[in-house]
Image (tube, rainbow, N blue to C red; front, top):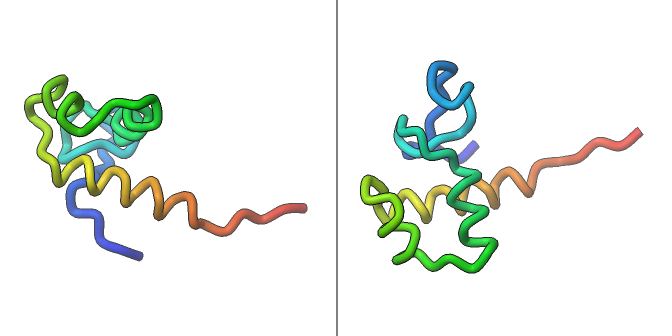
Length: 73
């Protein structure tokens, strides 16, 4: 598995969902904003604690998840 050092999982933060660096910013929020047309500059303006590397790793994590094997019955 690839190391995602900016993606954290903590049951006390957002119920253990994948978040950026222990903040209450879920990876899914970042990915959804990009999917709906937001650019990196807009996201960084909306979330001043984020860094460009956080967005990049959120996208890499989402891409990694989409490559997982799906078992069918």
